[in-house]
Image (cartoon, rainbow over all chains, first blue to last red; front, side, top):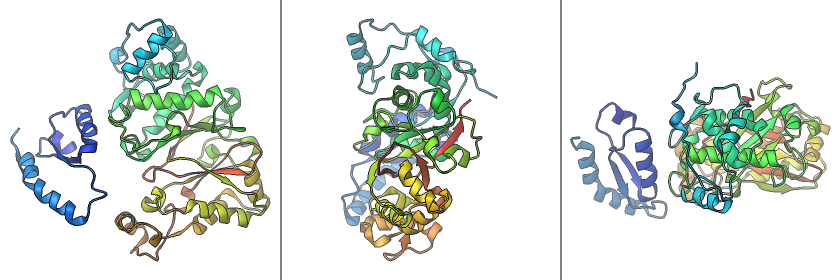
Length: 70
Length: 351
C-alpha cells in the first residue's frame, strides 16, 4: 500500500478467503484501485508441487496486473 | 498535541424507540455483537463524555484494519451500547489507546484466522472504586464493569476498526472471549508486586494492560510445593500447535492466589517463577508437524540459531515475556492464556 501511494507499480496477492479483507482495507487506506491477484484458497492442504503448479498458472496474470498502466 | 476531527465522524440518526425494533435495527447494520445493546441516545453519550477531560472529537487512536478514528465521542457511543457505567469511560479510553500501540499488532489480531480476543487486565485503586471483579469468577459472568468494559472494547474494535466477522475479521471460529474478556488483578491476595507496578506505574495509580489472548485453559492442580506446581504448569504450556512456540510469543498465566502463595512461600519471586517456567517449558521442535517446524525454522532461526527436530524451543524469546497475573478466589485453579504469538501486551495508565 505504501508503495502504491508513491505511485509505483504494486499489487497484492491474496487468497479468495482474504479478498474481502484486501479490498476493504485498500479502500480504507485510500487506494481502492490497488490491484489484487486472487488465488484459490486454501494452500495449507496442498502439496508443494500443487502450489508450484498454481503459481505457474497465475504468474502471467500477476505480471500483467503489476505492469498495467493506470 | 491532539488531532481534532470533524464532529460528523459520529452521526446522529433516528432509530426505532421500541426495543425489539431497535435490536433488529442494530443487527441489520451490524453495529452490535449479536446481543441486545443499550440505545446510544445523545443524553447517554453526553453523560459518558462527562467522565473524560478530552474533547469529544480529539483523536484517541486509529483502529486497524479499517483505520477508523477512535474519538471520545465514538468510544462513548460504543460504551453506552455495551452497557458501561459512565465512570468506566477513562478505563476504556486507556484500553483503546493501548490496543493501537504498534507492538500490540492490532492489524494482525483483528484480521487473523486465529481466535484472538483482547483481554483487559485492570490494576490499581480504581478496581475497588469502580467495583471491578478480581476474585470469584472474575473471568466469567456476573460483574457489570468487567462484562461491559470488555464488550465495549470489542464494539470499538468492530465498529471503529471495521473488524466484522466474515468481513475484515477472518477468524476461523473465534472464541467466547471475543464477546468480552476483562478482569482485575487480585492485588490484595497477591504475594508480589501487581502487574502495573512491575511495569513501572505507581501502585496508587490506575492502569490497564491489554493482551492478545488466544483462549483460556483451566490448570487444576493440588500440587503443594513449588517445584511440583511449576512442573505441571510448564508441561501445560508445551503443545505443538501453539503460536507461542512457533513465533516466540508472550504466554500468560493467571495464577490463583493459592498457587501464588505456594510459590512465594518457597521463596520464589515473580521473576524467578518466570525464569523457571521458561526453562522447564522448552519443547522439542520435533513435536511439531513438519510444516510447522519449517515455519518455525523460518521464523525463529535469527533468534535461536539453526533449528532441527531436537532443538528445544522456548515458549517466548526471554523469560520476562511470560505474563503473570494473580486473579481469582479460593481454589486450586490457575489459567493458561496462550497468546496470538505475534503480539506484545501493552500497559497504560488510566487518566
